[in-house]
Image (cartoon, rainbow, N blue to C red; front, side, top):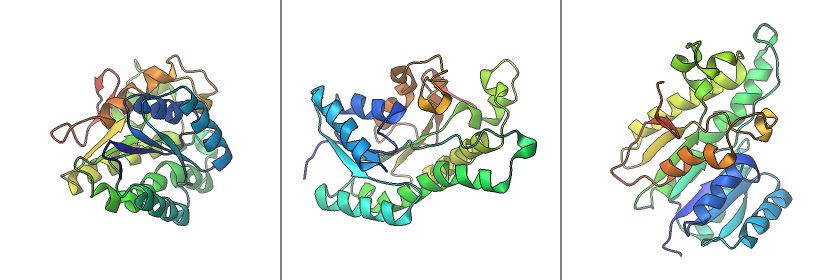
Length: 241
């Protein structure tokens, strides 16, 4: 079993997840590129590994909406590595673009299945392996639109997003983050807001690059045992809940 840092990023075959894998592999970490599409994940891993990062990039088949997939992925990691040091719950969807008055329960359920239940499902499956780490860390990839304070401020870009599904899912994920932080005092559990970053999620309309969008994720993935836990931050610092 390798003694370097072993990290898993969910939804990592493109966008923020892919860039997170690239940046952490450059530090010499062993990166597990989580992807529910095995072929796309393998292609992404091969592309990144071909850039000669200092660390190793391996593909891990993982559908965050499936209990069976999460359990199978955790078993595979246990057999191959014996532990996990960092879990980055990145996989997320925006869901259907529907006005609030037209939004139904099915649309809410679809988004929460990936954005809230997914991180809980994956975290629960990997907790026994994180317990074996000397410095276990969990990063939840949230969003500024999950902040009640920011979305209520007309001066903030977050207030311009008016929707029930995605913002509420990220608010729920923020609470999940703080509760895990309280329940797992040996762990460092934090939420990262990538900011308005150009990815498939927003049709590449964001004004930040994926490198800028992963700054907070990469920072929180590296916090030490005495670092922050239960925090919510972007690349510039701490955010209000």
